[in-house]
Structure formats: structure tokens, C-alpha cells
Length: 270
Figure 1 (tube, rainbow, N blue to C red):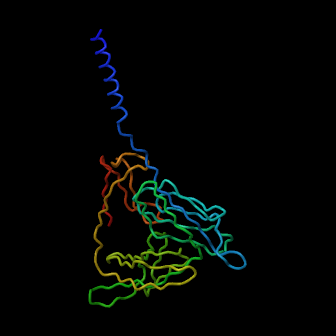
Figure 2: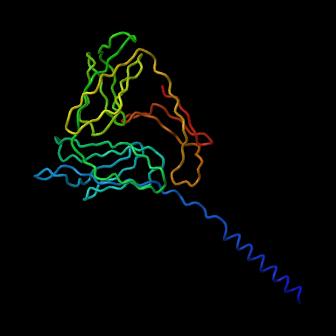
């Protein structure tokens, strides 16, 4: 009888020990929910021209296809955005008539670091577009004088806006969204010229500094990285994801690559 009691006691202790192990098992990590970006858009309105909520403004994250529209209070909310990813938010108002000025704005890039991070952009003023003018000149030698030529391509980064210089090297980019941009000039046989931090002001005209292109062949640039699926709990990359590189507004990509077994990719951009 004592032996049976001893055996039953051992069985009970074994069950309790097993239950304790089950209870002490770590919980599985929750699925990432992504970041949230919110804010309010206002524009001039009414007889007094005060800032009022802008309804129906399209709010888009460039390159991700994530879009929202402002409500009657001008508020918007973008959800499930990738974490630790640099994002550029664009605002585009609905045109009330065909001759009404286009109201657009490109915000400074943001980068949510933590999952479930909530970024409130506050009140964003949306006004008419601005104009940008300038010159793109070429220089044959380091000591030579820069001269204007026609046919040089000038691109406003993060947008689809571009222009071609006239015979004197002048260019004009009208009706641009408000924001800070990089201005880049391209010409075959010359190194690209770049000017950063060009501010486009609503309803005004800004003249950029001269872009000087030096004679030479542009070097290849190798871009590498990894890709993963939003919402996947694993920290590793994923294979078979197609990564495309293209100028904003272009119909076809300039380069395309597929991630390998480890989720990484590398591509050469001339």
C-alpha cells in the first residue's frame, strides 16, 4: 500500500512538473502591425482666406501604393506602414475646376523606427504650386569655362517633374509641389550635377544655382539590400521578391532584380 501511494505521489509530481514546463514556455511573438502616420491638412478658404480643413485631399506614400483621403476635418491616417523604412508623403488636392491651380506638397522624409509607432505630422498647410528656374552648364576641362548647351535633362528628385535645357542652358519647371528637393542634371558623356535642398515655395518662383556638368563617364553604382514581407514575424528576408528601380513617373523600370534564398539583392545602376 505504501508502495502504491509512493508511486501515485511520483506520478502527481511528474504531472505538475510537466505542467510547470508548459506554463513557463515563452509566448510566441505577435505579428508586426507596422507604423501609423496621421495629420491634418488645411488650405485657404472662405471670404477671409483663413486656413480651413481640406476635404478629399489625396495622401500618398511614394513608392508603396498606400493612399488615404482627408475627411471633413482634414484629418488622415495611414496604417500598416513598414518599419525602419524612409518614406515620403505627398499631398494632392482635388481641382475644383479645370483652370484652378494645382495644389500639391511633398513632405520631408520620415522613418518610423519601432513597430506600432505613431507619427503625428500635425497641421499641414497646402497651397498653390511654385516654379523653379535655373541653368545647367557643361565644362569640358577642369580649368575651362562653363557653357550653356541645349538638350540637358534636369530632374527634380522624388517627383515626376523634368525639363530639357534650351540652347543657352536654361530650364524651367512650373507648377511644382511645395517641398525640399534635390535637382539633378544628366547629359551623355558628362558626370551628373546635383544640387541638394532646393526649396520650392507655394505661389513663388525660385531660381536655382547653376548646375555644372563635368566631362566624364558616370560610374556604376551598386545598390544592395534585403527584402521582407510586411506582417511576417521572422527577422529573415524572403526569396523571390522582385525589386524594381525606376524614376518617378516612368512607365518602365530602369533596373530589376529578384531576391536570393537569403532575401538579399544587388543590382548595378549606371
